[in-house]
Image (cartoon, rainbow over the protein chains, first blue to last red):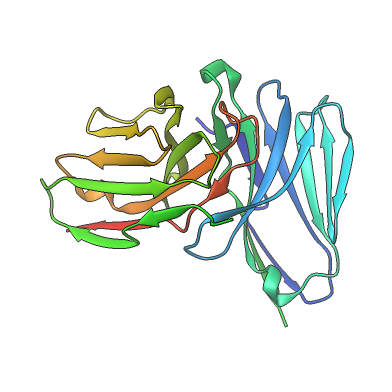
Length: 112
Length: 114
């Protein structure tokens, strides 16, 4: 079963616009991670936010975490064509012995 | 520091055959996790090894197995291949086990079963 579920499944925007992706999860977490995957390649870690943090920034990325709603969002500001990729949230499922479980991802397309 | 290396990158097998995939983690990383990625099921956790011990296993049949060597390199094996085993197999290494830390992924091994 999936621990995290991203929304929307696909997002298409113009360069320069902001992109927001959401992730909901089911169980208690210690941290939540976001990863990016360019088509057919390996995943690249973007950011990790701990359960006691509400917001975290890294360059053009802003991640928020609301543990009461079991949800997180990833905001990419001033998007570029190079941001075109799939974005996944991941959480550790301790009910299943501790393993990093990924959502289905949001496919972002940034048009020049 | 060299990244995670997976070999082979591409391979084609026929039903009933078996396949072995290799993963060399980042130097100093003792945790290696394996994932299967398909368009229909997304990223599915296969198993994790830490210091040569399997720490966790996903919901895959016994045809899927793995191991880790003393130098932290890992292999996964799939026996009696089925068409549905066609996928991108991703390996990731980390300093911590149990999915608590950042994973560093390789580029994957793309398996096609005919």
